[in-house]
Length: 173
Image (cartoon, rainbow, N blue to C red):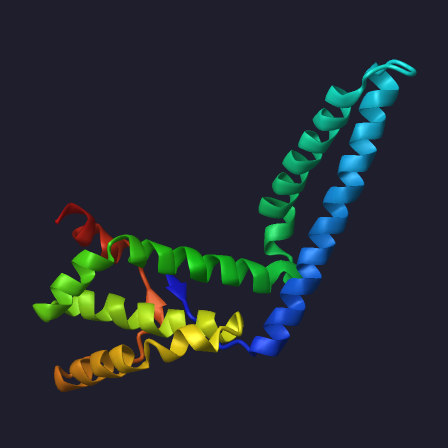
């Protein structure tokens, strides 16, 4: 279950820039260290050591990915970036079946209505966090019409939780 969390967009952007810088510096340091080490151990003086340099960079990428997805994933300094990644991942899950969701919304399917409302709220938050107000302006009418439809049907419009299993019924249809 994924849940939307209140985030200050300015703080979010500062924290994600900082975590990106930390990961980038770590990658550069690892790539340089591993490339130098590979050339030192396996290379030839004055020879073509390109493959060892590339191997060191590739190893740096793999180690950086392993660190980010492993021990760093739960660290507080990476939490905003992890939240942003999870938000975008869940929105993409909905986007992948959006044509089926909108068909079911027209038929007043409660699950589809909840999924679309979560999508609208999540998309609104994503646009705020990424400072992309122009994309959000285009959706205001659609979002308000859907919210009004949910209210008319007596459904809760504060759909801040999303269970990816809700999409199972849309994938088979």
